[in-house]
Image 1 (tube, helix red, strand yellow):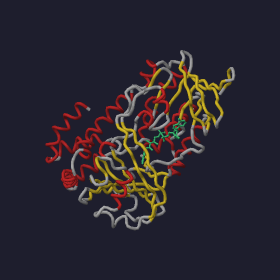
Image 2 (cartoon, helix red, strand yellow):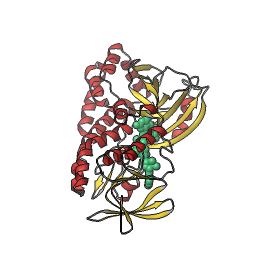
Image 3 (cartoon, helix red, strand yellow):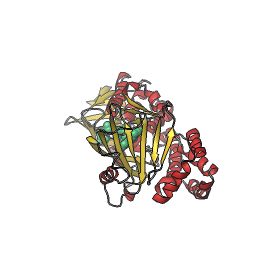
Image 4 (cartoon, helix red, strand yellow):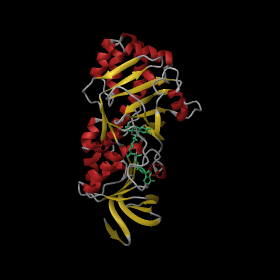
Length: 407
Ligand SMILES: Cc1cc2nc3c(=O)[nH]c(=O)nc-3n(C[C@H](O)[C@H](O)[C@H](O)COP(=O)(O)OP(=O)(O)OC[C@H]3O[C@@H](n4cnc5c(N)ncnc54)[C@H](O)[C@@H]3O)c2cc1C
């Protein structure tokens, strides 16, 4: 950082020191680009709103294996009437469960080790974009500070100030998630559980995730339009008291509870002159699982070389950033296709239809296919294979073809 006429000057200011802001700050500062992260909270990784699943490719990028609480080899997926489909294989890690606080802190620490600066208890109040720079007013621990940067990046989460201030639109879907940390539950080691059913998880699903030391996370997410006036908290109560599952949850003791938004649908233009948004701020979470850390990291990986080049040459007009952000178009397409298949196979069907899907999933040859082709990161190839190869799904194939064509 340098100070010019009383202003702090950085090449890049990132609003939000979550995992995506922290990761971008590491990549920029390790390329010699002066970077400041601005975080409104007093501490990184709080408040916590996450099931803590981090996929192996994302974990490999940051090497924070010491934050893993539990590895997960598979999922036991339950239909509305209780048909259980196991997907996965013992001993083959599909995903990791992390302590989100330690994970976020680890990512941000890496950024600082690479030379990035961090201001806690700070948030932007005003921003003005000129031909030469972005002038920012920041509330830093109650004091108003002037900042100047070449590029402003919003990595400030689902309700992004940056996205709203610069009128960049809204993600296509904004799901609501609710979760508790509990003790008193037992289950298959290294396997998570998923539960479907209109009574408690309309349109999507509920989950139980082992977090080590005999603790679990129980959560639910849904689209607001499917909730029919109910809160996700009510849905959670309906799950744990459901006639089919109440025995499963009878000894649960709650340790913590939290609620949060999940934005799924990359906004059309996540950039303007000298401004861009990434991660949840740009709507990167997956419409099939709600996971946003892996997609956010992939987003950075896809643009970093070109972005660093443009910052180095001060080519940061909307037209330059449009070219930098070109890979986001294929992410958006992938999200749209995944959403179309999710709608067809999970969100739209009523409980009877879902049950009939589960009966098909549970046949040995279909399970074999799911375990071979299934990849939670890229659900479209599996969906397409099921529609092509499972005779009973073929009647859905025409609908799917139509939806995917227009997705
Ligand atoms: C219930 C639930 C469960 C989830 N489970 C998973 C999961 O298992 N795996 C997964 O990958 N994803 C999960 N997600 C989604 C995941 O939490 C997000 O996709 C991920 O945190 C996105 O990272 P981010 O850095 O873009 O945004 P965030 O993690 O939201 O970070 C944004 C940061 O910006 C700060 N900030 C916001 N506004 C300002 C401001 N005006 N000024 C300064 N700072 C600001 C915030 O304090 C925060 O530190 C879940 C979400 C919910 C709600």
